[in-house]
Amino acid sequence: VRVTGVAMDVRFRIHNTNPEPLEIENLEYRLDLNGVRLGGGYYSEPIRLRGFDEAKIVSRFHLNMLSLPAGVQEILSSDRARARARGAFFVREDGGLRKLRFSTEAEVELRD
Image 1 (cartoon, rainbow, N blue to C red):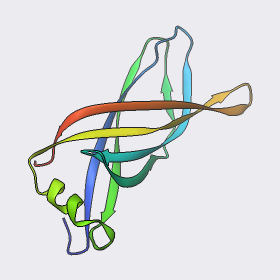
Image 2: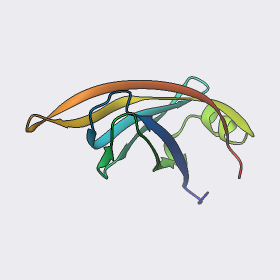
Image 3: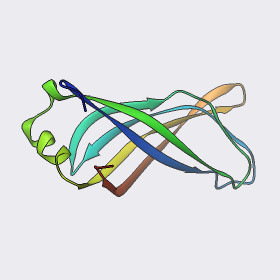
């Protein structure tokens, strides 16, 4: 936490549910806490998954406290919240990129 902002680590576990390898070039997402939109984030490193493999990644998410509604600051002062991430993976396929959408929810700890 800084005077004007907060940085959070958003953790994803990605599963390749197919027998073929999956090449994810990057991903982008929108993050909500308790139904309130916080903003967008991304992960820019390529992710290579073998068939039926999984990977764990961490995306650094930055919030500007000066531009957030008061309700969000109250949520961030809580110990737990309901998080929802929606977005897209950009997958390398046949020489181009294909957009694969995702949506996931979880109960998360907001304190270390």
